[in-house]
Length: 191
Image 1 (cartoon, rainbow, N blue to C red):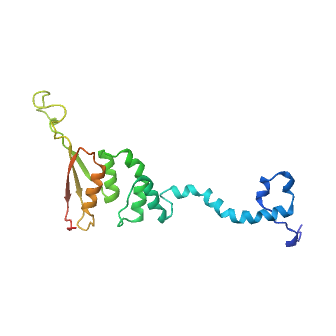
Image 2: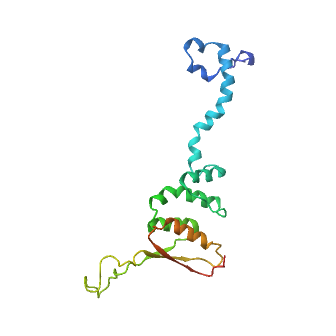
Image 3: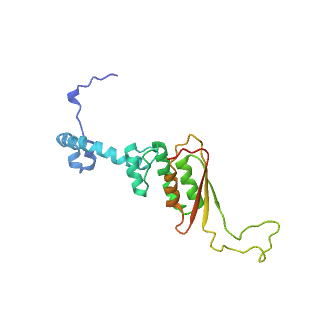
């Protein structure tokens, strides 16, 4: 059965009526009056209901990503792509958890460079081979030389990597008492 409805017979009612005492819920004027406020507040409610989407680096608006990064103390290289910025921001908490370790430095450099660096630690006195005899030619611990590590990068000749930025990343992630050597393999242009 088809019933024709005149537009004038349909009463516009605000969904906010359900929050009022029962006395006002059936009031036609109140239903139309609240529509004014509902039309103003509805876009704000939609934004607030979707606020969690702004905090996910994968889907946050591009101009929001640097602001999110500021929450974690990250600064982006202006030359980085948006994809690289988002990946670093997604990894920020994990990187801070591993800050000062080989794992943390490796991951940060991997995100920045797109390749996994080789990081080696040399600890004097810890050489173990078939000739090793504990207490005779081997000692446990180091004699001051164990606070040094080497970062080796194997870059392509067409790489546009800024070595000064690589050094800045290493300096920000290494423990304060350590020193390092950076070895870059490949034909790197001078910067």
